[in-house]
Length: 217
Image 1 (cartoon, rainbow, N blue to C red):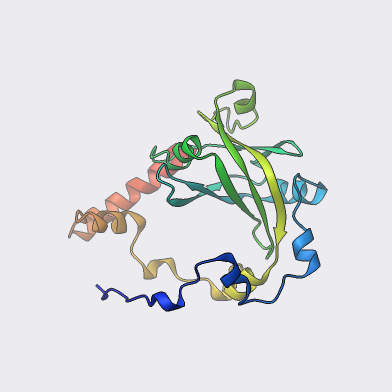
Image 2: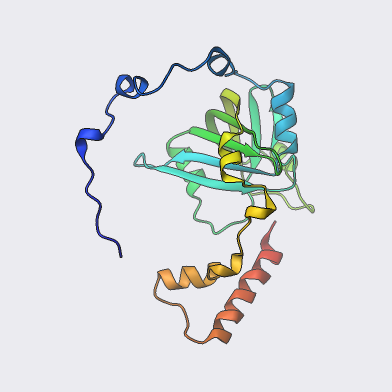
């Protein structure tokens, strides 16, 4: 375990004014790109996206973020100011949905494999069980129990710098997953329950893979 880091309060930024003075002003296009609804380009981006991150707040105001993924176009555009995100089977912690019930403000980040740009949406979330809306989200005749409605307040495209710095889509920079333990091994290790027998661990890993196949929808 590393030692606790001492944070010098003399270098903490405590106000928007203190922050702004550290950077040059944003250029006009960056300031003007924010929209209050979806245009044709934002709609096209959402239709191509198989993955997004949902930022929310817990009941106590703590920050939280959760991934959502499905075949491209899984997020339904209901109108220029409203989108629908299906909730697929998971671990039933229900973090994101419970957060939205407590604090409706949400932030979304849409990704498209191979695109360095991202689409950001900020708005207000609602949890719905409307059968007509859930029917739009069916996969293999299976309906989600709930879906997230997002009422859009702000939408804009984000530039490519973060993805180009990270080389996220470049195969030359992809890392070998086997260099870290499996997810099951990590979770069990974190609760001091990882087995010493490699064969037992392998069986647990296989069980997780089988559960993925059976419970995707």
